[in-house]
Image 1 (cartoon, rainbow, N blue to C red):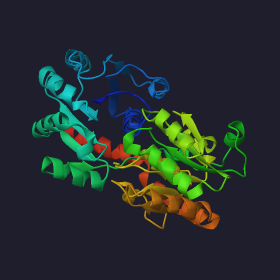
Image 2 (cartoon, rainbow, N blue to C red; image 1 turned 90 degrees about the horizontal axis):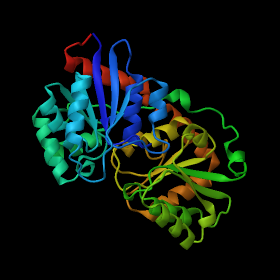
Image 3 (spheres, helix red, strand yellow; image 1 turned 90 degrees about the vertical axis):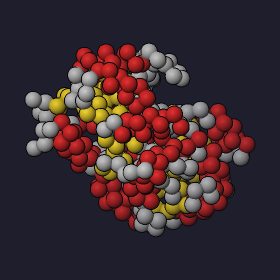
Length: 368
């Protein structure tokens, strides 16, 4: 008998945790598992729904409103009763809805993946609910050793497992196509790319400032920001205020990330905190050297001086110096690029999916 898995997320917007959940839902062997995805919010433009539809993974949207929405409790209860999962796999803050629904709908296994530092994942109420869920038997999975450390700090015990994020390596590392030409860039342009939400955690204003400090006097270099978020207009204004508005390009949410990465020269991330950024693994798989802040699980992905350069968190000067150093040293970039590809190969999506599959089977009593 196949094991039924219900993946529950807040939404299917294009972001790291959502991507990992969707990859898992699509990647679990159909000979061993049945999977359904539940999104509390309705569909967003350019979300992951088409990916799930292509793989014929059923999706339910529950029509959540912003803020606490008590309608989610009966709707989740009905979804669980209808699907009868063996295991509910949750992400981000949704445990505050799934835990009560699970208690009402019947007993089944629960797995919660902690994608971010535990103290940053949810608010105080969320942490209290998560603590109750873990005491009630929910199994916690951390995406990096640093996330596991933060979990112990917040909840007093370690997670049940550390399963890293993974990417489909076959989608990355191909030769650059026509992306530059089609988007108005020449082969002479140097392109620094950041694929990240324009949110406080990712610190896009700090990255723009570091780019201005490090490469503001070299007109060949451009900064490409792929993603949307609440800081979009503030980031635009910051770039204009620094006199580089014409060299900072806001690309919005992208569905062509492999092609975008293949066209660029450097990947940059200025985050204040991180779990284990999937966008960074993708960039490394595409052969991009990395410049980033050494926060969360980032140093577990990139060794300073091997696959890229790491700067202390919140040090715009150090980040600027790292950007300038790699931008002006093509031989070093080439060396780091080869090492980045080799490092990314350790984060194969297939291996990650199999680790989750084995966990689910053990929990369901069907370990092979």
